[in-house]
Image 1: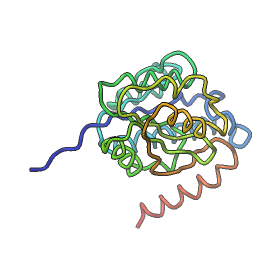
Image 2: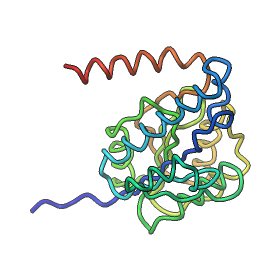
Image 3: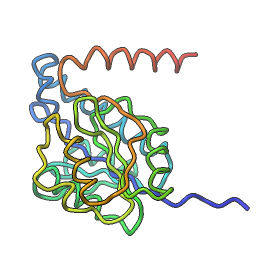
Image 4: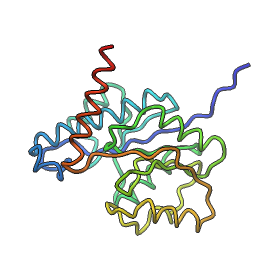
Amino acid sequence: MTVEAPIVHIAVFARAPLPGQAKTRLIPALGAAGAARLHRRLVLHALAAARAAALGPVTLWCAPDAGQRFFRALARRGVNCRVQAAGDLGARMRAALQATPPAPTLLIGSDCPALEPAHLHAAADCLRRGDDAVFLPAEDGGYVLVGLAGEAPAALFEDMPWGGDQVMAETRVRLQAAGLRWSEPARLWDVDRPGDLARLAELEAVRAEGACT
């Protein structure tokens, strides 16, 4: 008899792709409208990866609200959209991780085009085998995924220097201090600055070529 793997929830964080409010560090290279269009593509990629992984329910956590036209269109297509909580990034992440029933949860952003369903499966397996937490560090010093097996400890999210290059390093210190067991099954990259655009173009070209073969 086949035993089904336990459900793992996936939370996706995304801002509305509004010109001047999305991917602002890319505006010098792409313009406000171009940066917003890129952000839209990245959000759709994150959602597609989360849904293709088929680990469990997928929720899109929206900012500034779920009433934006982009989010309304996704909701009509069956995406479960909810509004991010108030507070800084840490408070919003912790609220989303605690919003699901007592079950393992993975939280991803929408900045990582390299993220694939296989990465989500690897992260889920870490939690299923007994880890308290799992992370996919980013090359810039942050992380593109955090997963927790149970309650979200406040210490992992409060007073964190979000946006800096020491987020993952500080997180490791806090994990160790809390006596938590964690894994880092992969290291990925995200798109934040104009220098990342050439790498993105190369990745998309490889995927396009693979889709045609």
